[in-house]
Image 1 (cartoon, one colour):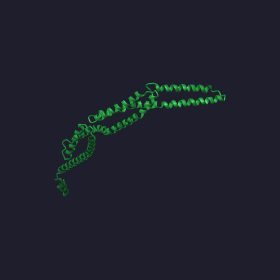
Image 2 (cartoon, rainbow, N blue to C red):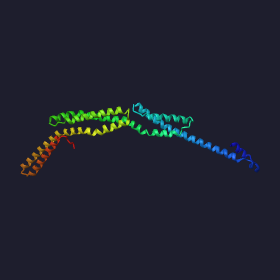
Image 3 (cartoon, rainbow, N blue to C red):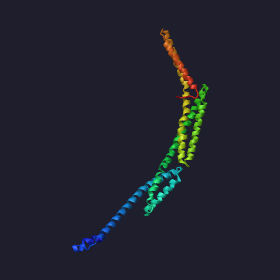
Image 4 (cartoon, rainbow, N blue to C red):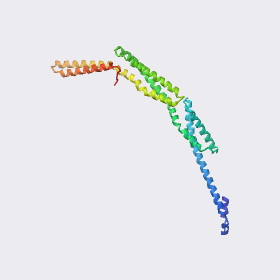
Length: 274
């Protein structure tokens, strides 16, 4: 093309210009433009490949981290990952025959990101389960003497304590089963943790709540009796001053009746802590 341009520049007469074939120059210019567009497309492809490769490297790091933690990464994910890496290597070396498949393979990887994110949360899930079991076990030990003391007062909560203990044992089994399952099927392990562990926490803690409510019985009874005794003393003092205490005495009798009802509620089984 440069040669043609120089040739045209050397033209000095109308006759020479008329004898020149302009079609050849336009053809060369078209070929040059096509080459420029091809180079631009290749540059765009390589730039996109660098972006995809960076994403694949991050994806692979996450997969390797999960594998080191002995978490179950599906074979489909690892197979797709290797296919993407191989195709990127081909494209970078100039083998463009299957380059268009890179986007389909990347989409397949993206569809598994949710699974990887779920697996990444598993260590924290196990930590939460262990903490809950630690708290429950500590409280189980703490309420044992309370239950024994209440039995001596005629309030038998051994069945409630037994339910509390068996609930903790069941949740420990669930946690162990979920930990074993995650290496085979992460989704089932998460469902087990959610449905059979975390969803059951409130029911297990309800036994603890009943025991702690009943532990307040002795204090309530003592405070109630002390309050009645003080009221009687005040009424007697008023009587000595010739003050009419009939209304106060009625109120005291009503309070004593309500107090007696409250004490009886503590003895109703099953106890409603509310």
